[in-house]
Image (cartoon, rainbow, N blue to C red; front, top):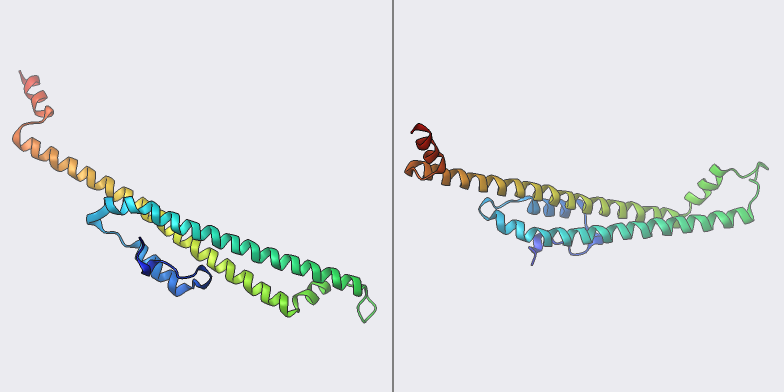
Length: 172
């Protein structure tokens, strides 16, 4: 169904290089086959929109995992530490610093960043497809108009248009 060049093997491994390759292929328009491209368009859009939804779900999961883990660590730290070694009360900033210094939190932050990147790339692909649809619709309309003008011109040359008949009737 799809050109393998524009189909990511695995959404989790989508990177900028593959994104650029996909967008370049999807942006191409065959001016001689506009109707064919329009009929295939919904399948392409549906496919990539589905991947975008999956990327958003993965992002939401990553954010939830990070938030849940951070909350658990904050609770554990609050239970065990009410004051710092200097005797001053534990501040929100100090608590956040302690949480953010944990290796697991840094790993989860990295996962969120990667998920945000993939979601953004998938969103970009869908925007590219929406732009392509607009261009295809405009090109199709232009082609129909050109065909109508050409047919009207041919009819004018042979005197078969209603406009010619009206002018003749008005002159009499």
